[in-house]
Amino acid sequence: MNIARHQRPPELLDLSLEDISKRYIGRFKERTPDWNAFEDAKIEGYKRAQHRFIGAGGSGKVTDPTVIPARGFTLSIMFVPPGQGNAAHTHEVEEVFFVLKGFLDVFFEDEAGERVWSRLSPWECAACPPGVIHGYENRSLEPVYFQVMLGRAAPELMGYSDPELFKRRDGHLQG
Image (cartoon, rainbow, N blue to C red; front, side, top):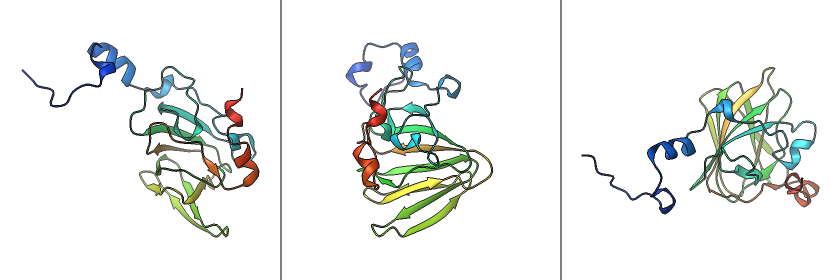
């Protein structure tokens, strides 16, 4: 007989293994790309699709019942066409980009607007510390797929460094 060395959380105590399996396995083919996941995604140059797997990520949106409940982090797969990216922003927690397919150019930025860029290839990552302005752009000729993780189950919305974007950062949640 095997012994579980840690207790299940209360919400899982009465679930069967089949129920746990159904709730805690996410398949890419079951994910719907959300092209309106972020307020800046409405702007040319920042268009991208989020495929949510665990929690809402930095978008704040949890509209898909197939998304795995988050406990200590979120996980999404981003699809970014060539020439697109995201606006410079910060988070209150660490954010990680892990490239699966294609090339992703990431930057860190200071308050004076100075940027340091690095190109990530497949199986490379960037860890963006809390409070450090950062972002990315697909400067290649092919789409890029990469994993994004945020270090909290329910992180705050992105803190865009652009004052106008920051004012309306929750606009994508309005409709």
